[in-house]
Image 1 (cartoon, rainbow, N blue to C red):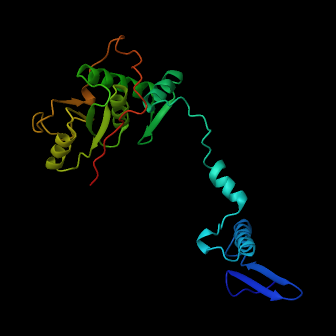
Image 2 (cartoon, one colour; image 1 turned 180 degrees about the vertical axis):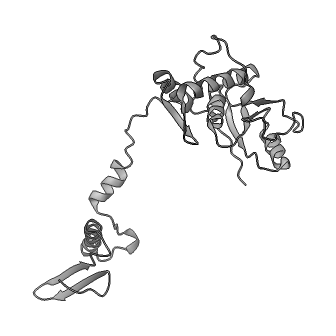
Image 3 (cartoon, rainbow, N blue to C red; image 1 turned 120 degrees about the vertical axis):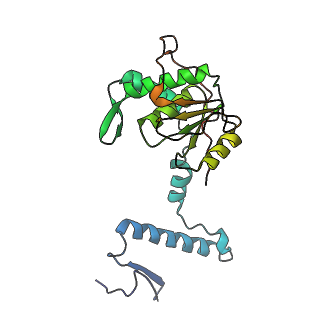
Amino acid sequence: FEQLNYPINIKIAMTDCLNMSFLYDGHAFETDFAEKLGARFIQLLQQIIADENSPVSQLEIITPDEKEQVLYTFNNADMTEPGRDTIHHAFAAQAKKNPDGTALVFRNEPVTYRDVAEQVNRLAAVLKSKGVTAGTVVAMMAHPSPAMIAGLLGIMTAGGAYLPIDPGDPHKRKNFIIQDSQARLLIVTESEIPAPEPGSAANLDDIIYMDALPGISEENDAAPPRPDASGLAYVMYTS
């Protein structure tokens, strides 16, 4: 046992050869971290011995094993991408597989995949009937709720791009976002949320309330066409 005055000490002594000791405070560092730090120090010394004229900027601090791990293990480019599936298609597949399973929990109340999927399909049918196709920007005003999740998935199912608008924003900002994004449709998850009137923003054609969606026929309940996974998914306005 040796008392240390610093968390890490390097002691160098000259006898028949150069002796070096790497000491650390076990209360300050875990053994694994200290061993890695020591290996990196040795890595630096070996490079300096191999070429004493090597610039400091060209010295590599990580060991060859660590470099292999960072470049090839952590960044394995050969991993197979799972079909480039979209979020809403992955959700629809899970809803079909496990309709009575819990899709989400809101205020300690579970909501099933069936319930969310039903609202998703109803909204998507309405959006498609109003001309929403791939890349169409659809705005949505929502408080955190299952309806917000269903709204997001419904927009994507119809092929549109999701544009969130904070219900607490001033009307002037809401109108600016709608006009600037050229969104023609606005989804409101609850009728109590104050929304701009159609026409208050020049390009806004209609407002769709999630709590007043019509039912859908069996033909509209069919699986939606698969949008390109590289297409526009959402538009975000920061403060």
